[in-house]
Length: 136
Image (tube, rainbow, N blue to C red):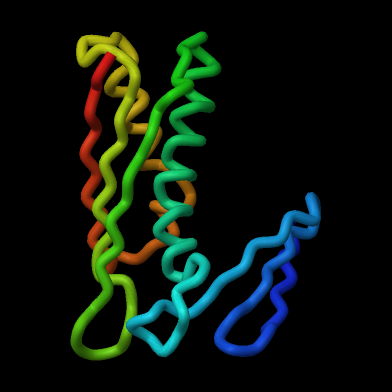
C-alpha cells in the first residue's frame, strides 16, 4: 500500500506528497477549466502515468532478458470530451523504442506495455491507441 496526501493550496492548486519518498508534486487547473495552467492538471498526471507505466513494465521485461532500453521515450496526447461530463476521452501514445524493428523480444515488449496497471485500470470509455516506433 502507498499513501499519497493531497492538500488544496487555494486558487485551484493542490500539492500531493508521496508518502514513501516525501516527493511533492503540484497540480493546477488547466486554462480551459478556470485555472492558470502553471503545473500539471490532474488529468495531465493521468496522461503522464500511462506512458510512464507502460515503459516501466517494458523495462521490467527488458531487465529479465538483459535488454537495454535507456533512451526510450513516449509522447501521449490527451484529448478531453467537448460535450457531456468533462473527462478524458482519448490518450494517444507513441513509444519510441531504441531497438531494431527485428528485435527478437519486440512482441513480448509490446505485449508487456499493454499489461501495465494504469492501462488496465482505465475503462473502455477512454480510447488508448498506442503506436510503437522501433528506431534502433
